[in-house]
Length: 127
Image 1 (cartoon, rainbow, N blue to C red):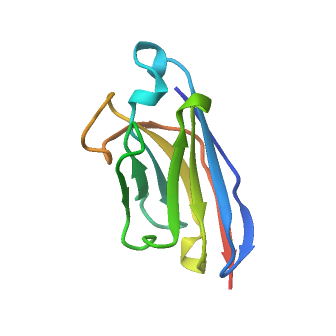
Image 2 (image 1 turned 120 degrees about the vertical axis):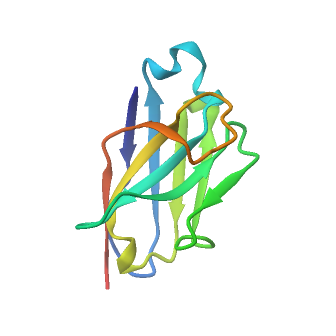
């Protein structure tokens, strides 16, 4: 599977960024992209990778880490095989490499259960 994240960069605290992730590859050869939960993870320097947000196959359900609730919004466009993460009111503690992740199986009710992820994009928030 190829999950190509983009949109990272340097932003001041209080600013916004929109991350995108284009998905393709073998994982979606049995079932289309639109059937998989998708999500975002992040890893800050010196810390473990952590969950950020997830969305189910038809955008009917979303889930967020407490640290980003009310500031980040996950969405998807199944026609474009793309998932997005709109990040507002960014804080220095949001600085991390952000990874796009695909659900481990189609129609998985556990939308935090990821089976693959791609190379990340770096988000740096200055104070």
